[in-house]
Length: 432
Image 1 (cartoon, rainbow, N blue to C red):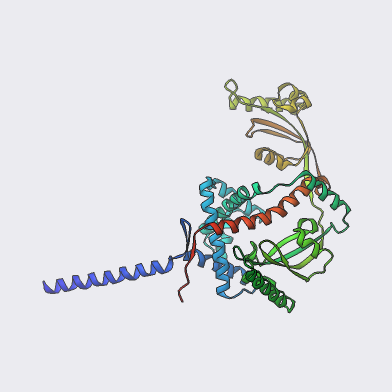
Image 2: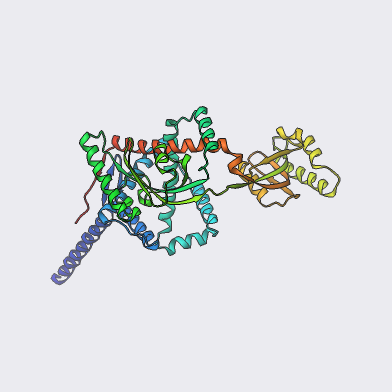
């Protein structure tokens, strides 16, 4: 009996010891790295993002700053994500699984892969596909929150659009695009003159390092307070009009590799490098000229009867017993009926998704079998396709978008800074 008791006590001790060890490991793996208002950033999230960045950097042969500097940038991004997701929750912004699946499917198609091939490609790069999927959801919600929060702070007047159009017509350098890198040496909240002076010294030191050949992307990742820090400060390709005015005045006519700054803004001192230069690529878009006949189901006309009615019309057209335009004038619903269903020239992506998909599968002169869109049942006649120069067709829209994007970038940075200033954020020191 005593031996049995001893065995039971020993077993109990071992189990307790194992339980303590398991709990210790769980705490070590998933401890809280930061508190952000009512939310938290977990250490596992930090490690996942750090691993992902290091993997991508190794793949692209890109050097990185110290682990401490990189962790600081990663923490900033995850804190921002937490704040934005909390705002999104209050706004009621959600991305359903169906929307998420469609977005990832589109991403796969852009890479000329099936969804399964895309999933395998993510896994082969060492990423957890489910985590990747949820990160895409976060980015979608984040983008919607930013747009909703920032766009009401932006106003582009008709006069601004007119002025920019006149400037674009007058400029001879409008066809030149610059690939810019940006480093922002941020001011703290409510900066004193001493803070501004200290930031200026840091900016001057960064410029000195860059002029002596230091890696721009590495310094941007380590030091920049800009939104593109973890992308090495890359702002992408922009012409003079698409840049913030303070940048364009200093960049115009400069050669590849030039570093300009420090440029004082309301957020801090900006440093800009011309990473590359190219001539503007002519952007062409496809337009289609089509006609349609629309029949809307109702209490009297069922879905099946609407489809059958259109199929009967199509059979008559194919047999040469009826004319498409005449049938459209007689039976089609909607404003195009008086024009024989003529929709004119248009960008096919501007239509209902089902309509766009149908047009994409058609050849000029073909008719499409009856299909359902959000408006009702259609048959389509594709009359022609053409490629048009988007730069000449959409100048006014483009001028507005340039001005909007220019202001959006500045206001987005101000908005996230104000959001952080008003939030409770506590970042815990990493264990040594």
